Length: 87
Image 1 (cartoon, rainbow, N blue to C red):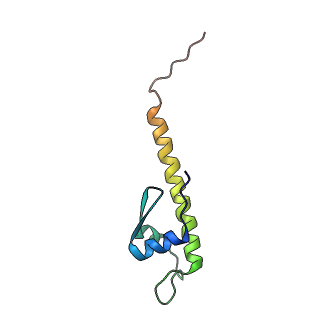
Image 2 (image 1 turned 135 degrees about the vertical axis):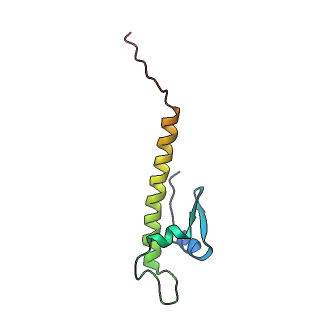
Image 3 (image 1 turned 30 degrees about the vertical axis):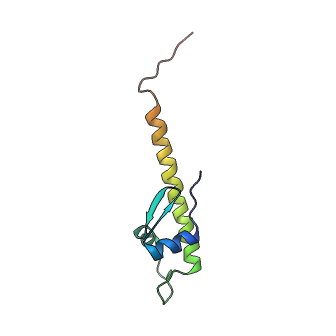
């Protein structure tokens, strides 16, 4: 299953501090670290464009994390020594 973050996930994280997306917990600090100047309206809420962009960035991070963990799992299952037979 490919992890996908939505603008609704970003809004939830911004309001409540964290969310679980495809089994991974994402904290508000992650979102805050990706924000740019002008992403927030004067009332302190994220703009719709910022939510879309942050969702895309978070999705890319989640996919990368998923690929890395799958590669590590695969590497852990490989035998330490390979022996080739020549017939």
